[in-house]
Image (cartoon, rainbow, N blue to C red; front, side, top):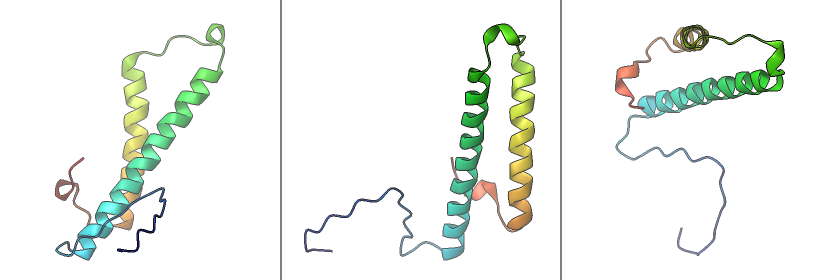
Length: 93
């Protein structure tokens, strides 16, 4: 675009000319999956922060990691079922 027009965007997904469209699709889906994971972590943190400190006991680091791991596994398994050809080794974080 050479007309000096500006366009504001909230998200940007670029498919490069040399990129395989299927790999692009998988990359976008992986980004969406990671976004959902972060959103879930934020919702959980907000919930925990809203509970008065004197109303709960301290949760061990191991328990927190277990909950996080289980929720991530659940999401990942759900994603893998939808895209059986997805290979996480093809996409870097």
